[in-house]
Amino acid sequence: MGWRWFQKGMLFLCMPCAAWAGDAAVRVTPLPSAPVLAAGHVAASASGASSVALRAWLHAPHTRTAWYELRLAEDWRAASRPLLSVHGNVRARVTAYLPPDYRPRSDTVFDATLDPTFSHDSVVYALPAGLRATQPIYLGLGDPGQTQPIRVAITDLAGYRAGDLQHIRVSTFFTSVQFSMVLVILCFWVVLRDRMFVYFIIYVGAQVVYGMTASGELFALPGAALLSPLGYHPGQCMAALAAAFSIWFILAFADLRRYTPRLAKWLAALRWPFLALALIVWLPPLRPDVWLPNTVNLLLVMSTFLALASSWLAWRRGNRQAGFFLLSWVPLLALTMARVVQLIAGLPLPAWLEYGFPGSMAYAAVIITVGLADRTLQVRRERDAATHMAQFDPLTGVFNRRAIMERLRNAWQATMAGPEPLAVLFLDIDRFKQINDSRGHAAGDACLAAVVEAIRAELGEADRVGRYGGEEFLIMLKDGSARMAVRVAERIVARAATLRVAAGDDLIALTVSIGVAVRDAGVASVAALVEYADAAQYRAKSEGRNRVAVWQREAFVAATVR
View 1 (tube, rainbow, N blue to C red):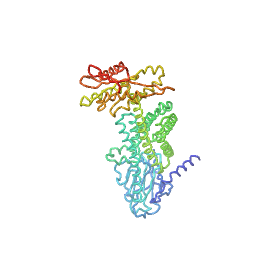
View 2: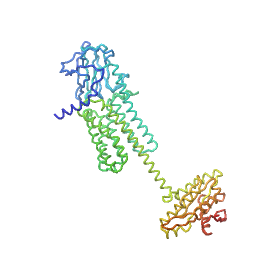
View 3: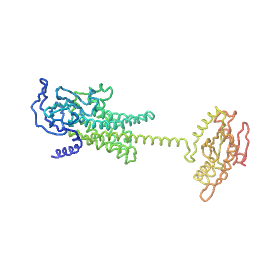
View 4: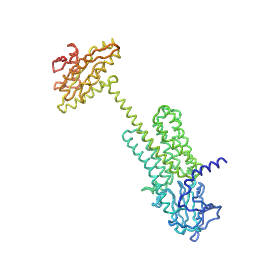
């Protein structure tokens, strides 16, 4: 009793697609066997009980071909000629005997030879303009069968074209969104070469192929005649592949092995059944048509719940990407559950589910693409932070020794091709060890920061400063600053002498000594230039500190602070 009420409830949800303006009432009678073709007409076998509906829901069993007789409840009187449509993600082959000649026709939505003026959403047959209620139509459904009912209707041509055009617009939009996301991530992969992007491309790409195969639109593309003999099997294969690679993707995207290792282990194990089923599709002796679709659907439910549970835990533990995954897959999960129930229960496919399912996949692709972009941005920020840490002194914020030497070497190479001057200042804080020993390292750190600010205040845009080690700083001057290297050094010395750094209740007075070396024909290398500046700095200290000393070829010229 409970199952019967459940079926009635699902049928109620399917009602939005059960009526369409322009449909004619059709009397449907199941036939126990195929009609007999004789003398230019078809003679039907003994018939069972008939029913009348605007749209008939017919079944296509796996074990045999089911035959039906269709008749209009009354003669066709509409201005537009009638059209017979067989719809419902039809994978079953349709065999039709149509008036007035009753020549047999056999088609599926996967045939590339269908009428190109219609989409492959349904198998469509044009009927005589003056179709009468006494003229029967015979349909055979099967080879193979399918679990959900097949929708059959007789509608007017104009109304059907309008609905078919709307279907094309919606389907094309959803497919285009997914395909666009694949192209975007393909561009990411070309630049970044991250394996995770490959998983996404295969996962969403397989979803696109599955959707186009299920609707038959794949077989409307140029060259699709080569795929027609494969029928719906490419779609089943792509569905299994999409499921497998979606697991690979979410494991990498949300880093589930790190945040939820146990659940991630179970989720990862489900990849292999999906891959096996993608191969079994192509093995007819195993009769995959009968059992494989529902098996894939049940595995899909299991993997989706595992993915959502592990992603929720990862998100609770601070994983930002897991949040994007949850945001993208919750609507997809709800519609997947409804779709699986509809397929397993053999219920009609409602319009909200028919379009909602691909719509949720397109939505998920967009959100996941945003998540991938966000992840890439996070990686970039982490890389920039690591680069900053590798190049800058964390205490003073200036370049470290390796970074300032690298920039000095680059400047050296640049000045070799032109007349631009280059100078180096080697600065040392006077009696810095005494400050550290008597006032503590915190006071010493404050003095270092104060001196850096004094240095920066006197530098030009092209000049650079780096902490060479301890209390020593290397300053690179280019262009106009290099021509005035001694004056720049003197200004730094003078500014440093005015500094007063707070240390508890006391103020620390600072002075610095600077050695200057300017590149000329007598300087052979960057190392020599730095060595000469360092030697000049020692000369400044030996002459009393708080001054500038200049290296000039063989001798020093001391310069006191004015």
